[in-house]
Image 1: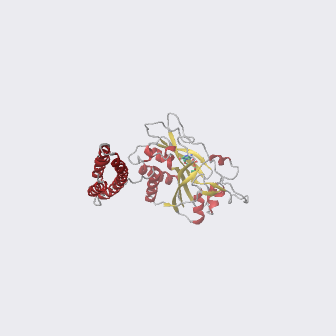
Image 2 (image 1 turned 90 degrees about the vertical axis):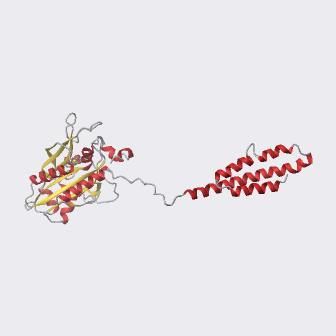
Image 3 (image 1 turned 30 degrees about the horizontal axis):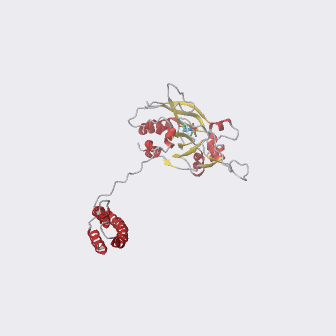
Length: 347
Ligand code: FA5
C-alpha cells in the first residue's frame, strides 16, 4: 500500500471540491464507516504479520491526518460560501421604525391646536421651590388646601426656612404662571406642558407622575366667556370626529376665583372603566375630571408683581393623560407607563 500516494490523491480531490457539500461527500467517501480508509484497514488482516506491523500505524496516522485536513477544509469552504452568497445588489432588510408614545402624540396635538389659537409654549422646572409651587399661588404654609396636592419633598441638608429655598417635585404646572408673569408683561396667552408629580396611591385614573398642560391668558378684559370659547374650541379640534359630552361644575382652587372644573363623560370602552377622577361621580355616570380652571386670583397677580386692578385673566390646568385616555379609549392610566410593547405598538 502506498500510503503517501493515497494521501496526495485525496488532498488533490479535496482541493478541487467546489463547495462544502462536495468536501463533505469526499469525507464520507474516505473516512465514513464504509469508506475507503476503513476498507484498507480490513485488508490489513490478509497481509503477513511483518507487513501489518509496518503499515498498520501508517494507516492510522493517515486516518487522523485526513480527519484534521477535512475539518479544516470544511471550515474554510463554509466561510467562503457565506461570502459568495452575499448579494450586494439585493435590497436592504426593512428596519422596523419606532413608534411615538400615545402621550407624545397627544402632547404634540395639543401644542399644535393652541399654537393655532395664538398661544405661545413656555416651560418650567420639574424641581420647584415651595414658594412657586404653593405660596405665590396663594397657598400659604398650613393652609388646608395644601392637602389637595400630596407632595414629594426633596431631602436637603442645610438650608434656611424660607419657602424660596425649600425644594419639591412640582405637583402641578401652575408655578410656571408666576415664573412667567415675573418676567413678562401682559397682554399674553401661554400654555405650559410638563411632567408633574404627586405622592398618592395609583388607580385607574391616578398616577404618581403624569402630565399637565397649564394655560394662562391675561389682558385688560379677559373673562370667563373667553375661557369657555378657548376650551370649547380646543375640545372641538382635539376630539375631532368623536362625540364627547362635557360639563362645567363649580370648583375650588386658592389661585382662581371663581373656579370651575371640567368633566367629560367617558366613551364606551371594551374593557373595565376607570372610576371617576377625584370628586367626579363614579359608578353609572362615569364622568372623568380633566381640567381645573378659573379667573386668576388678585393675590396671584400681586405675588407676580402686577396690579390686580389693571389686569384680569383666566388660567386652567388640564390632565394630558386623561385626555389621551378619552381620545384613545384607554381604561387605565397606568397602561401609559407599563412599557408593554403590545400596548405601545398600537399607536
Ligand atoms: C391642579 O393641579 C391645578 N393646578 C389646576 C388649575 C390650574 C386650576 C389653573 C385653576 C387654574 P388638579 O389637582 O385638579 O388641579 O389637577 C388638574 C388635572 O390634572 C385634573 O383635572 C386631572 O385631569 C389631572 N390629574 C390630577 N391628579 C392626577 C393624577 N394623579 N393622575 C393623572 N391625572 C391627574
